[in-house]
Length: 92
Image 1 (cartoon, rainbow, N blue to C red):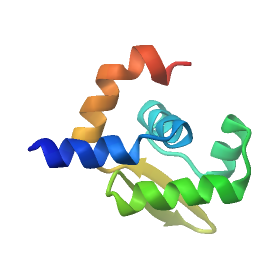
Image 2: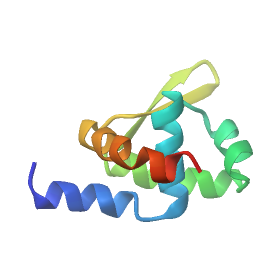
Image 3: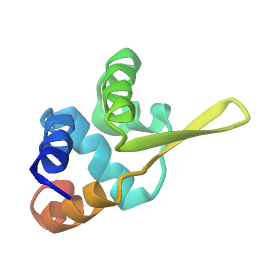
């Protein structure tokens, strides 16, 4: 991994909502939009906008099960980085 790879991950996580989504996925393994809306207290459209950014950056991936799309972290480097900051940020 080089500096550009790290920079892309940090860029994708640079918004508090995206960071909270990623931390939630790290903690739960997978999650759907409705649960994210309930846990974060923001609109479905706002969650969807941030999910799209995280998907485009390659950090998360969605998997459809019936009518529900479950999201999970896809990028191993992002998982490692989030594990390192988990105690300080992801548990709040």
